[in-house]
Image (cartoon, rainbow, N blue to C red; front, side, top):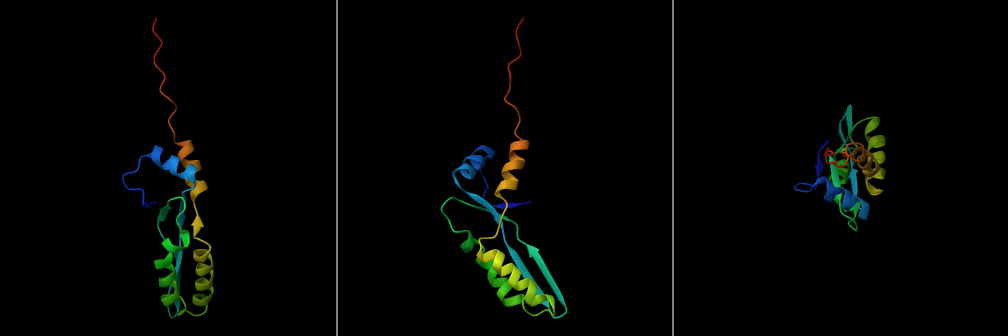
Length: 115
């Protein structure tokens, strides 16, 4: 999964930022075409500590507000669900990424013993 906003950041820098309170979130959106409704998640976004997660999801919220309602019967249902998630700041993936990064951290290098 692509994480927008971490371009040029090392894994150590990312870990440090996550410990400081940064978040990784994704947003829901809904698009309807009369009888077909699609509900999807955006790519993940890196949100630095202190920044609003709601503001970063505004494009996905606006897309849902304009294009989500038109499908019958699922358009209004999926639109409301997507808006609730987005107005709560998106789906927080920080714990998942932190856990995955902890599992993939290589052990510290040990110098070979000299005999």
